[in-house]
Length: 278
Image 1 (tube, rainbow, N blue to C red):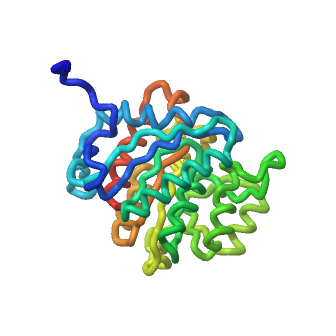
Image 2 (cartoon, helix red, strand yellow):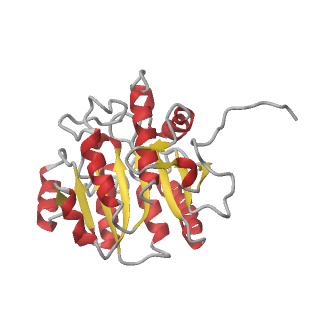
Image 3 (cartoon, rainbow, N blue to C red):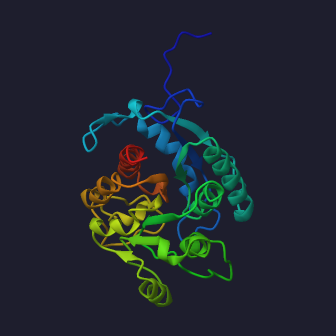
């Protein structure tokens, strides 16, 4: 046995005790349906590596990561180019995590991975709502005649839980039909006070990092100008702390498009704050 010390391969502050943990961080390195620039499958690994460069302490919540009792399970091995099989693997693991009365924090990967998690948690939780932070509507019925893509993940989730249980924040891009669908069901929200609509719900939070402006988050597959600032996003996260959050994910970081690694560092810091609301 070597004496070390050695650098951690896990996200900073993670516990090594799965049984006693309350939250399970699960890497989901899949980008097989990416409709623009691929590379989100490399995010979980890069996020773990870069996390050693951030502080454990959250100034927003006055906590250290090591106080939060989360376990980093590593990355799932997901078949490239086989979205249904990948979703089945994610669903199975999410189901196991919730069967043990734990919460999940998924690290993507593309946004389609969220569908697998939602399917898994629905085996153990009913009456749920999904709060989506995103630049895009993600309500396409098909993309190039394919139904299962990251551009239609919220439509697939709506089929499971109903549009009345979906809230969309930061949306600024999509097809006309998607915006009409969003308007029809009144899913779009603009102020954290609107979260009170879900005060009696169990909430899953899904954050597509392209919700942030490209000046902050250039390392993503489909950047869209006019996005939220980090402080604006955090105003929502802080408000969500007041609600019953049963799981979350952070998706669509494509780290290789930002050679400065600012995007990855920003993702790490956001993950620290999201852990605090679980």
